[in-house]
Image (cartoon, rainbow, N blue to C red):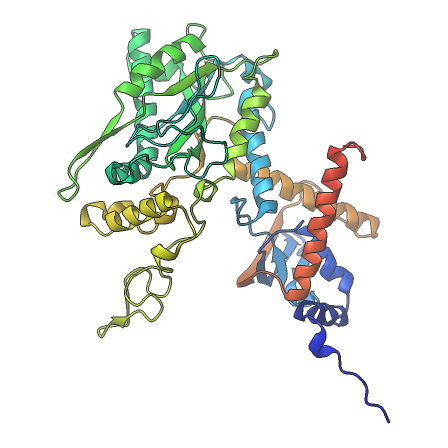
Length: 485
């Protein structure tokens, strides 16, 4: 009698897990959870419950528990803004940043449309030179010229931005500049206010009573692996975007104040090991007025899109890595244990999660990482935490920041999405014949959640890949005009 053929050893683990998911029951709910994530690369796995009750009657309005899920857990998006980590969540972050910037230029999202009449300037600030690098110079009419090395480099040349003479390049200065770039920006905004007050012929106190300076900025890495900033700077009234600035404050005043404010903005870094250094902005900067309407290059929409494009980029876009290089086992100490300490079994005392010499990066990037790591071991730079931020080439600030009264906030945008989802859920309850609370009902929510893990099961990964494929296909068809927008 022939024996039944066992194919389990030739079926991939992912397919086998998919079959197990289908056998759990309510496979449609499992697929619904994954589709709702829209292809998130590494979702957060949670366990817990939440219950919403009417405060007056005690009636349960909504309740949810992961024990009712087929897999016993809830998958939520990771929310990572890095495109290298999660393209799906980074696109949502970029979209939120776009709306945040656009609201501060055109209005909307609880910002009045009169914001268009406020003077606005688009500013780009760069880092100083720490040594000559390979580049693609052009003449005034845009004709390409050879690099100092004598070669006409193509756009994708890996040597672009790297030192012409690595032995004489000031790597220490470059890393320290990245580490202090955010503090330099804060000092620049302070000097800009002082310069404006002097130009207006009034005290800073009087200027603050009549005028407010709002801004939104993003950081971007240049090819030479130094950060530079793109910023929107705007005049407001004393109450921020809800009040107009005085008639005597114009965009020309902003443009005239930027250059002297940049010149007086410096920081002194004190070190007995590498010597004292004065850090300031590069000589090259660009400042232009933003036009509300018209065919100009710097319109509201163009500037918002330009800034949002960089909101999800990080240091890895300039050729470095997107993960911390500090050993997690010993937290960068190199040893483990209590009173009796031993070498960390994972890093063997190097404090590094992986050897710097083995990183798959360009030699110029590796040298910046190594310099940041070495400077991080000096006591005078302990507060900079350069070992923790070595993979960011020393930069430790937020990539996207704004002043308090510029426009809406990312949290407010997320709250709107959350409210919309609750409204959709209530509408579904009404269609199912259930009652929903009146708008003025006081609700009390009790929740208990715990982190379980990150990522998908192998079978869920297959479903997520299918979701990503369907979304990409739909976007391609919309772009080609095959489907209505």
